[in-house]
Length: 582
Ligand SMILES: Cc1cc2nc3c(=O)[nH]c(=O)nc-3n(C[C@H](O)[C@H](O)[C@H](O)COP(=O)(O)OP(=O)(O)OC[C@H]3O[C@@H](n4cnc5c(N)ncnc54)[C@H](O)[C@@H]3O)c2cc1C
Image (cartoon, rainbow, N blue to C red; front, top):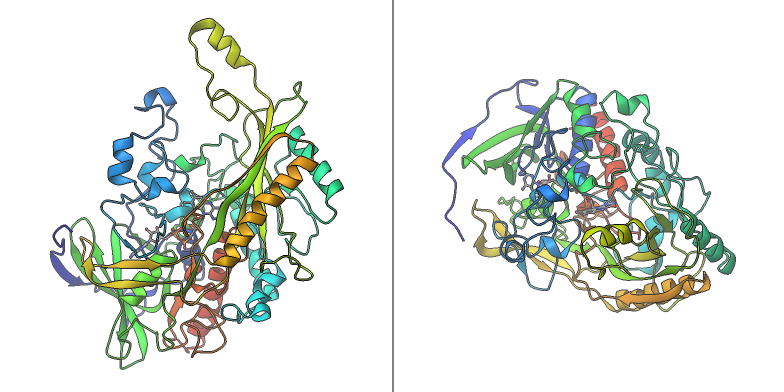
């Protein structure tokens, strides 16, 4: 452990809106959920401070965005030594390359302790993982919010789909989600921009799967890409997705949604936003006299200076485990085990999605067909298991993401093609067979024993106690994963694909990068951390609106639901503030 970087302490004395507070609202984290909280508070007229431990980033100035491979040292690949030294965790997840590595944290400098293996993917910049996500965006369905109550695993959600639906309606148009209207109970439609068209091989697989397996659907992936920008997007300078498929580097067009291209500029244009980067929030401060959070203490990771800042309301959006780390480090006589933790539930029920099983194969024919350019989304196969009734020998279900493309020199089937000169170039002009692949994300059962906590003595270089992960999959996940592979193989074979290969890889929890839980919402203050408004049961002006609030995880990608619940929570806080209750 390196030496502490703390150099001095100060207290902000701006008192720029309400004489009793420095800011109306403090939002911790500027990623998917924090960006949205900032936008909502600022648009409602609140002076809002956003604190993020990441480095600053400027939309439109992404350092590797336009670099061709020959300008990169290893054509975009990372050197083995660099992975071993600095990205030994991040590289086990996805999306990390020489083009994108600067958006991910350096593992050497940001340690945590894996009591059981856990892959914790973290971003290094303002905007969080919203800059590097894969943009898949699906609404949860009715049974997702009822599952805990029905099968008895986890805490019953204090809300249902109908509580969230208006907020999906609210955030989707702002983000811009391309998708098709399917009228499926298991995957509710939203407010969509035109869907990305399926290619010929995807259409063939769709037709065969739907004919062979009534009730199963193959639909265009729903992704946060502007297929037809609306005034709400162009007003922020966002434009049409160029289908360059280099999203992880950042996109100057704002063709896909990120906090940096969408919510933060929207917040900034109100004049109410103060955004501070390199600000590691270490503690939410508790005022015994008022029984409320008085503000936060943060450390400037460049200067080492510590600052205390106050606000009427504090929103925690530092990504699930980041938020939990801060809350657990916020101790007082009243809350020795973490602010607002009279239930003892803080840190428990950590979940993500079970991932790493699927299948691929060759789609015969269509060799006279190709596609123009690239496509930032393939297909989605919504959950079809255990919907109307319990069928398999596992609880809950999974969905598939995937797509088809023609093999090239660098993709499966042609990877070993080597050569030099004219004949090599000529050979590479001819694309290979159509390949189709699907991979799945499955719902993990909430388990009280899956938890994170703070190490008693080990700290990071800035003095923050290290997080310890103790999370493991159970038998339900193992059985489900086998089924994910078997069903994928069965569908691709029935669809007439050749050389179908299934896979079921061992993957540590966290690998899906969809971590949730640890400060779960619930009806009872004795058994849950938050109420139905993402509000602490104990500390009324403290809200948690990232994945930490989630009582279960569905099987669909979660970020759109983080944003919907964040907008809903700000709306509630606004009403409480205006009524003088907070
Ligand atoms: C490669 C990849 C692909 C993904 N694909 C998808 C997808 O297709 N669909 C989907 O729904 N999700 C996807 N995700 C997950 C998605 O990015 C996350 O669900 C989402 O970004 C989480 O939002 P958040 O606000 O909780 O956290 P983040 O977006 O990570 O933002 C958290 C912010 O908090 C800051 N922070 C952390 N600790 C502190 C602290 N102590 N003090 C101050 N600030 C702090 C961080 O710097 C960060 O900026 C993907 C993620 C990755 C990495």
